[in-house]
Length: 206
Image 1 (cartoon, rainbow, N blue to C red):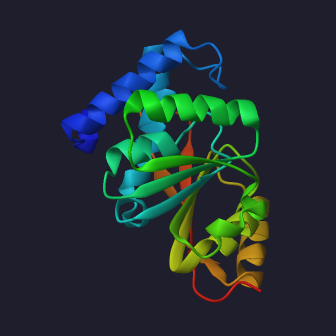
Image 2 (cartoon, rainbow, N blue to C red; image 1 turned 180 degrees about the vertical axis):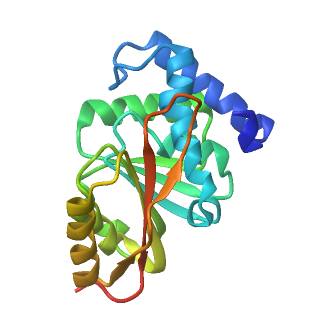
């Protein structure tokens, strides 16, 4: 975590999350051992800070939040931001509530809803994040209604897929968004190929 220059409060919150992962076997992830989780979950989440759209965000929706990555980690790293962890599965929401409490986060909440069925979130965010959730075109469809004008979707993905990128571009064009080139990141030393896809909301969503 050192290379990301986190404040001591952020590092402490993330350490408490790692401790909870190890002792709580209800966590909705198979990666729970500290050293592996630090790379696979935490460093991967923090790689988003390489993008100004993530670093500068103030109202974030992490859709399909699951075990809480990147949302929980971004809430710790960005104390000036407010993060809504949007998750439709009740048992995952229960885990997220425990994690928010254990980390001592005051800038995060858990929303038990599907991203496409959350009226309170419409047009309310300058950043939507998604990791290991769906194809790019589906993520664009989830994100566009939640974003304010000028907001961004950042999607964590692996190897580039031209067909998926084309579908994402078509969805973006139909929904008032535009895609930017994927940014390759190296979250940790032996990480598999990783890209962050950035889409900007440039017009109204039909």
